[in-house]
Every structure is written in C-alpha cells, then in structure tokens.
Image (cartoon, rainbow, N blue to C red):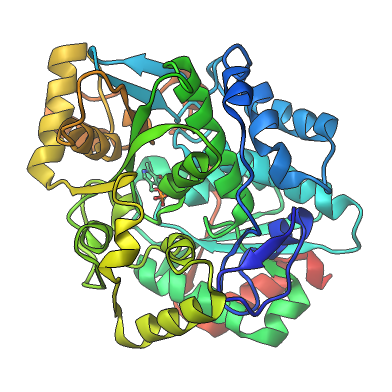
Length: 466
Ligand SMILES: *Cc1c(COP(=O)(O)O)cnc(C)c1O
C-alpha cells in the first residue's frame, strides 16, 4: 500500500515511511491511496476470531509490502497481550439497544493505548534496521502523554520528551507519566498552559536545523498507524452484534477526530455502519461543521471531558480530503484559507454525500452528568465524562429500535474520579493494574515556557546528540 498526502504535494510513501514520518512535508496528512475493502464473506469470517486475529485481517491491506502476516500477528500479540481483559476491547450491554465498547483496558486506562501500544512496537521494529535514533516530542493535556510514554518506555533507539502544563493535569494523569523512570523517558512540566506547551513543540519542529539534528518525530493522532489500529475494534464489535447481516451504529466521543475517522474508514472498507455519531461537548466546532457546514474556530472552554476540549481537530482534514473528491490541490487551498481566517464554509453538496453515515451532537455539562447518573441507576455502572457524552449522543440520535448502538467508552472512570463523583456521588477506585500509583517515585523537570530552555534540555538529554 502507498500513502498520499491530503495536500497533494509531498512524495507518496510506503507504510514504514509513513509511520516514521507522521506529518507530510507539504503540511498535509497521509492517507492510503485507496480504501481497501473486505467482502461480506470476509467480514462474516471475522466472527469467531480473537482480537489479534481480527487485527491482522483488518490491517493486512494497509501494511502490505512492508509487514508479512506473521510479523504483524507477532506485533499485535505483544501489543494487546498487555491489556488486562482477555477480549482486549469487550462489549458491555446496557439495555436492549445500547452497548459500551470498553477501550480502556490498556496500561494507562484510556483508548489511546490501543493504538500507541502497537505504534511503539512498530517504531522499534522499523528503527532496528536503520542507523537512526528518533526523538519523539509531544505536548499533552493528559491521556496522550501517559499512553505514549508507556508505549515507548525502555524501547531501543528512541527518546521521548513529553511536555505537560505544570499543575494543570490531574494527579492520576501526572503520576502515570512521571512515575515511569526508564532512562529514555523525559517528562517536562512547563510553566504555562497546554497551549504554551503545544506552541513549544511546534516551534521545535519548525526549527529545521534542530529538528534534523535530533530526528524529531511525533506520536499524536496525525500518525496514520494510530488511526489504522483503531479501525480494528469497529469490526470486532460489529461482527459480534451481527454484522455484516445486521447494520450497527456507533457513537464516538470526539476531540481530534481520530477515533471517529477510523470508524469512517471501517465503513469505507465495507463494514455496514448504520450511523457514526460524532459526539462533542460544548467545544462544538465539529458539530457545527457537520450539521451546518460552519467550520469556524472559537476559543476553547475547559470542561470535565478535557480530551474533547479542542477547537481545531487535525484529523478532520482527512475527511475533508475525501469530501473534496481527493483533490489535494483544492484541499490545500481550502486549508490555507482556514489557517489564515480560522473559518471555512463547507459546501452543502459536500456534506450531503455523507449525510446518511455521519451525524453529530453537542452535549452540555447537564446532559453529560445525567448520562453518568442514568448509567448508575439502570446498569449499576460508573462511566467517565467522555463516555457519558458519547452515550448521551447515542440515546438522542433517534435510531430505529432494531439498530444496535455502540458507544465507544474511551476512558476508565478512575481517570476522572472528581467529575464522576460530582455527578453520581460515587468515587471510582483505581483498577488493580495501576495500584501503587500514588506510592511510586516521580521524576520530572520544570522548565520556563521558552524555546531556548526546552531546546537546551532536549539537546542535553537526547541520546541522538551523543
Ligand atoms: C483522546 C480522547 C478522546 C478524543 O479522541 P479523538 O481521536 O481525538 O477524537 C476522547 N476521549 C478520551 C478519553 C480521550 O483520551
């Protein structure tokens, strides 16, 4: 499989190159040259397979030419062997129509583990035959940082520097990052906001000499391999609920549009998805874009579902590429307008093409809290704020009663204990696999929010410089 940039100018790459590159050199995002498809018989044949075997069958066309089946299976077995549930992503039934797809059984309690555990292994494998030492740099408001650190800790030929805003991530989230003491993990608390941390990361990538010297790389959800790994659980869940003979709907708590885009790819591959519900909180740019075509940035409001507190969703560009008929030059012009004016009008005709598949909803804090309480009352279960937004959107979607609706449960409630307790009066306990988190030694450095300070720190610590 070859990969092409959404802006049409960067060279096409194979799977290995696209995994290591992250962003395309023309500022676009990489997508497969065409969407591979699975026939109804092939989808039917997934019904009895384990998660790992499903992963191999679904991802095979995307890695063709780079990884053999046996290699891909070994990587998946290692990545998903670290999950605490034998089904990896189990389905839990709430009532006759609604299910949760629990994506939080990985090491750091959020769905990002599903993709990042595999990505860490892919990095290690692709670097093993190269004379390159990679420096992964990222900024985090919580979940991505801990999942990326867990995935890369102790891996050969790669350092990870993770910037978080000092004092502005939850204690669970901070400890999940700072108690990882592997020598290639470097936690930095930035004296500033998340936006300051993110701006520093961008500035390091834009410092061409610095980026080249340290072989900078990124693990945010613009990386194609992450999206690819997330396609798998749509198939895994849908066949268990009767696909391809029965259509299934999904509701997806959305921030950067990565997770729900993976569902869109599953549909393009032939999975009969009745509806994909893009669930947003009050930071509702995607809901406005999909329902009215108004893709315009406001300012971010902090909520109890911080991983959805986003204005610009980077992966939305991948959908826009398809909506523009895969015309890279046309999309590049539109994206440059968007970057300059912070707004873009999406023509109604473009949205109409996907109106049957894509729907959206905006859930306010009351709707979120109500969904958390209702799940306690009706199913005796605690759910996290992000999942609650997805479930509220699923219940409000008005789908026919015979369509099963799966809400993606993107984080374990113990990751957001204060918000869960505020809504339900119950405080979720930490699962066994993260017990001891509050007793472990922490290690991190605190730096001022200046490019000079952070670059000096990276240069001193990164092995590539040695
Ligand atoms: C990252 C995250 C999301 C949003 O996922 P996107 O792929 O960015 O849309 C939702 N919920 C949780 C808990 C997350 O960590």
